[in-house]
Amino acid sequence: MNVTHMSNTELVSELLAAPTRLESPHAPCACDPAAAYRAVDQELPDLAHKLSVARELLLRNLRAKMLEGPIMASPRAVKDWLCLYCAGLQHEVFLVMYLDSQQVLIEAEELFRGTLTQTSVYPREVVKGALARNAAAVLLAHNHPSGQVDPSRADELLTQTLKSSLMLVDVRVLDHFIVGGDRVTSFAERGLL
Image (cartoon, rainbow, N blue to C red; front, side, top):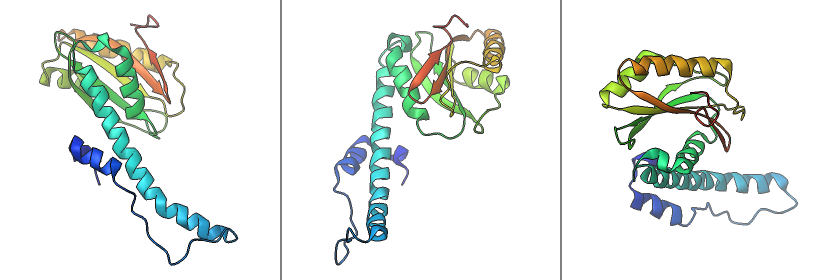
């Protein structure tokens, strides 16, 4: 079931619902480890579903905070949203957060998806996305599944290329974030913009 298409009310109902258990005629015996593992396996789908529901609710809550005003007025919410969005991904993604002239979030988009170690990013597509949304500024972000948050030379070059490309159409790059696990590095905070 795709939780992104559910309403908040439906998500809360799913989260609070009692787990569905397959009742067996008798509980697994502690002397039969295989039976105990089968019993746990039967409960994991419920747990995984509840975790995906909770994650979706948290993403929506953080997104709502980012929509309350200028996005950089709540940089913690942005970083938390990015960490939660990228949590558990085993491949790189490149995200663009489009902002209006008051730096309020218009839309966040996963623009590119890559492999374990790299993502191909096409400046033309980033510019097209910004123009289509009439964005005045953007925040860029990508994850490193390795957990490493230090920008590589390729990350720095990409940021400069995107900054130059977007500058041609009067769109500012406010920051580029690298997400690794529960840590986030900001290019702006490091003076790399």
